[in-house]
Amino acid sequence: MLTIGAMTSRFRVRGDQPAGPQTTGAEREGSRRLATPERSRVEAGGLLGRVDRILRIDKLSRLIPVAIGITWVPLLVLSLGAWWITTEGEPILKDLSIHVRLLVSLPLLFVAERVLDWTGRRAVARLFEEDFVPPALEDRARAIVRSAERWRDSSLIEAVLLLVAIASGVASLVGILPAAGVVHGIVDSRISVAHIWYSLVSLPIFQFVLWRSLFHWLLWVRVLGGFSRVPLRLLPMHADRRGGIDFLKQPSIGYGALLLLAMSSALCAGWGTRILLYGTGIDAFKPLFYAFVLIATIIAFAPLLTLVPQLFASRLEGRRAYGGLVTDYARALQERWIGGPARKDLLGSPDFQSLADLGTSYSENVQNMQVLLFGLRDIIVLFIAAHIPAIPVLLLEQSVSDVLKRLLRLFVGG
Image (cartoon, one colour):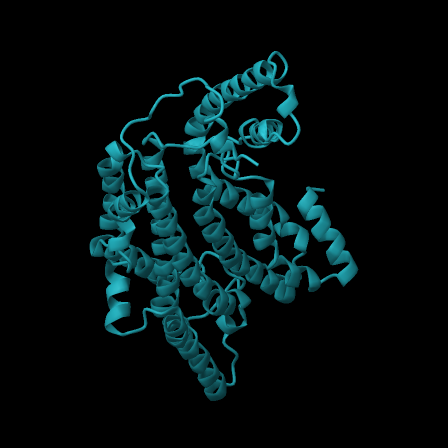
């Protein structure tokens, strides 16, 4: 049976001319290795990256326990010590959002940043390795990546983010912001040693990691925007039905899901505290939760819209070019078997099977090529990640059966 690639050798089709000098597989692979910018940069830089490597805590298995040991363990010890000495409970210790922020959200932010770095690096590498970047524009594409790397490795940027985080902690300490931060469960909290530690150490560290993570996301958005202005060599016949670059959505899904899970956990923990201590109903938080999920989903997928013009143009060109190929092949087949004298050789001929294969590929891939890199399934993944932390909050005031009904209404919008 002939493959689609071999069909054009049996019949003449439009544009059946040599495409220029041919290269061997070894030469193409060598050029891909040279073209891939991310092969030379594996470790992220920046202020935090340098400190991590100096202290040898750059691996998540070491970084997360150290972060918890600095932010949460002293807070717990100081609160229990104050309670033992004064016999008065520490109000800030009752805020579930604080514990969840430091024990759940902070580790998830570290993981999300690593996922964004790995998936983004791999996506860029595939653009070069799989020849989506035209050879004449490789220098321009490499410049986009190098610019993002310079911003990523800037110690000045991270120093500014650290100062903003410290200012947020000081504002929390002096009362400009709520005692537990912007997302909190306790309405009022007195000044204590635990409060001071949280405001000057724990909260700034969390804020710094959050702002740094979002800054890296903005850099990825900048890279996507840069590549959207590079005419990529998209493949309308590709099985992913997105020109072969479906993998560019992976950073959005991976990072977006983890970031949503992290921030939703802190939000829901704060609301859970208010339900337990103040009797607030869950319905009071529904509008804000909907708005949070909607805005986060838009932020995650909006950057991918920059590639819509290229995907749309590729779909139009693919339908024209491959439609012409199907037409030429069908006409040549008709002239050979219908209008010609060769019917005695019809039995066992692969020509009709080749036509069927070509038609199937055209109808399934080219005709159905999508102009959006994401679909409904990808959006559902983010919605699920955002709603997981809401389940314990719902269980605080309702039965399991009622929670299942509410979750169903959340997903369908009822």
